Image (cartoon, rainbow, N blue to C red; front, side, top):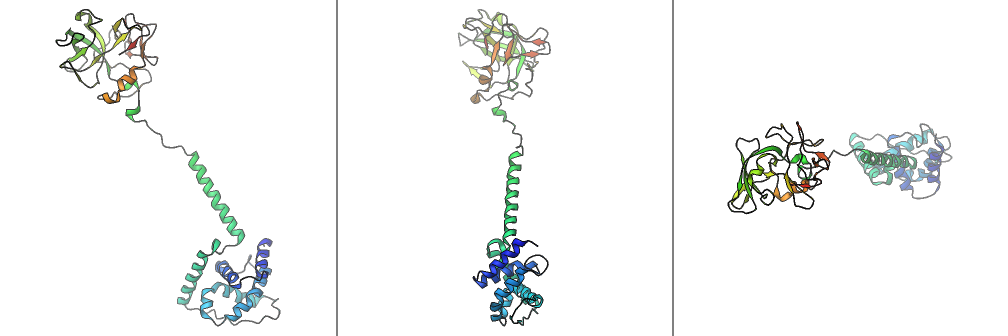
Length: 324
């Protein structure tokens, strides 16, 4: 039997405080118990019995009082018949034969008293244990939430700047001529593997003295939004490397044997290209910042070669040059 619990009730009984408060606490405490502490009569029962005897004697005939404190009356009646140290305290005649309706009223009254009292009528030890349990559960839940891995966040396509978003293909310039309305542009017909050649405008007249120099294999970006250039819609872009001083511009060439329409790939960069790049997002411009040729004349993106099944794509002579 917990000595500290017995001592607690003995102290409450001997303080000489508000007896009604003590009776209410006993009533709530005894709702599911037979004795105040443990499963047998103790000094706690004897002390509290003596402390509230006069108060119960005064209200013994008050049915309302018995209904509002049915558990303390039941307990008191048991103790007065079991306690051997009553001294000169008189036996109180207590009628515990309540009707079903009265029992319901008593249960509701007891429940209201319990819910309105601090700790719900629990002993100090029980309240402390309950509080500790609640705190431990809260901390465990918080720790579990902290340790729990969050859902994998897949970056939105618009936020991903992988070169795989570009549709770069092996192409073949079939025809090239001066643009009729622009001195710096060539007008080309280029086979990119579609059903028919695409019309492309390129600002290359300054670097290729005659259009015939463009004819043959090249690489084209095929998912740019078509743009009108001096009255003619350009449907793709030819990729060229520019020397560091800007004086030389060369076509990026696919490896020999590559098939027109073959997509250029980059190691470790998986995924299908965008159907069409949004020019407002400047996806191509942001990706192309990392296009560069190496000392070995290989076209790369972040160190990864432009590749087809036949090998890597190269330029004729431009080293460490940007590509666009």
